[in-house]
Amino acid sequence: MFFQGKDYIRPSKKLRLLSVVQALTENERLSQTQLARFSRTSSAMVNQYLAELHREGMVQFAPVNRKSFAYRLTDKGQEARRNMMEQYCAEMVRGFASIKELVRRRLEPLAERRAHGAPLHTASLRIALFGAAETGEVVLAALEGTPFEVALVVDNDAAKHGTPFHGHTVQPPAALLAAPGQLAVDAVVVSSFAHQRTIQQQLLAMPGMPESAREVVVLL
Picture 1: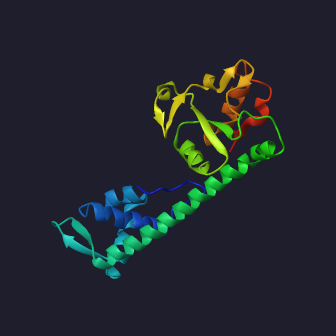
Picture 2: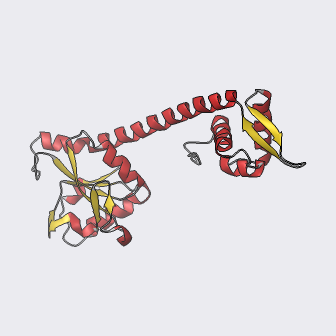
Picture 3: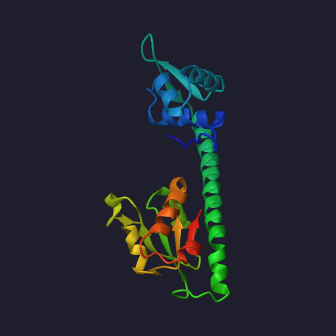
């Protein structure tokens, strides 16, 4: 299933066509109802797409019985699918790069603090990542090649505690404190877009959390 957002990344005709031809590459015996489910559109729309692809010589209809067909991509259809997939992947990579740039810009003030002599633990900026999920993976990728060192990964989900996460072991939020009133890192990056404010309030209310945490809890 291809990624389709609800509000900001809306499905287009090209994306639905790609969904249909990719599905046929994997299974040419899919019904129009199944193709509609895969491409998140209606059976009537899939019927129109298949007719269009047939007219353009990209899909052949092969009768299976009186009521159903197998929809087979021609060589032309396979070439079109590869071209569409290449464009789709290029757009996803550009989107990923944009998010990485957003993360880096949000952390620039911390780097400026170091440049102006603000007291920090080490020469590099030690970061704790709050959120061991997909957005956490993006943040980790964004920090590669930067002066930021991810020293901790924490999460509220007890089921994740002690499990590996891209070279780190997920720990509970209490691990953020080296001692009462002292953070174990220079900053905490909250990577959960859906619950950032709630997590921020949770951190600031934690027993032993220093007042300075208000300046170093970073929301994306």
